[in-house]
Amino acid sequence: MPTLFSRILEGELPGRFVWQEPEVAAFLSIAPLTPGHTLVVPRRELDQWTDADGELLARCMTVAQAIGRGVKRAWDAPRAGLVIAGFEVPHLHIHVAPAWGMGDLDFSGTEVEKDEAALDEAAVRLRGALRELGFGAHVPAQT
Image (tube, rainbow, N blue to C red; front, side, top):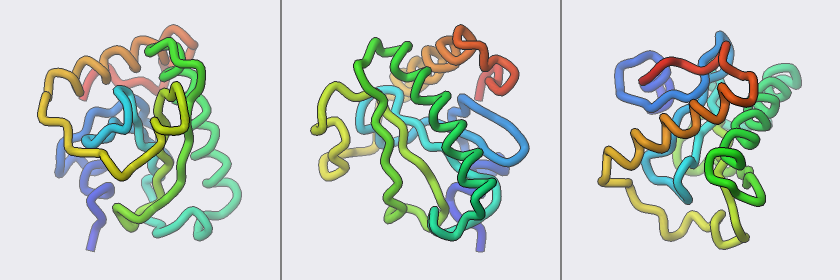
């Protein structure tokens, strides 16, 4: 049975994509820790990061680093937080979010964002920052 993330990657469910490539994609979290919270997800279904081969994990981390640079720029954040937890969806995913302190990486208070416009604006903002940083080849026009 396909995971929730596989269904998003296949276009069966909506996603606000900020990065697309053959092996890895990134889209905004619908329950953001902070505005711009992005999930870096391999297209191949793997339950945990420890299940990934070194090459795929390295590619995921390279994309996460680019997303991290983008969220720092887009939100003028001092740090980009990165978390690999994997409890929410059984499909390897890396959380990347702009962070101003450790509290910004606390998942216990997250809720689904009800303001669709806020998520849309965050996607536009992050895509713009990624293009400014030279990653335009991987940044979709929208979606």
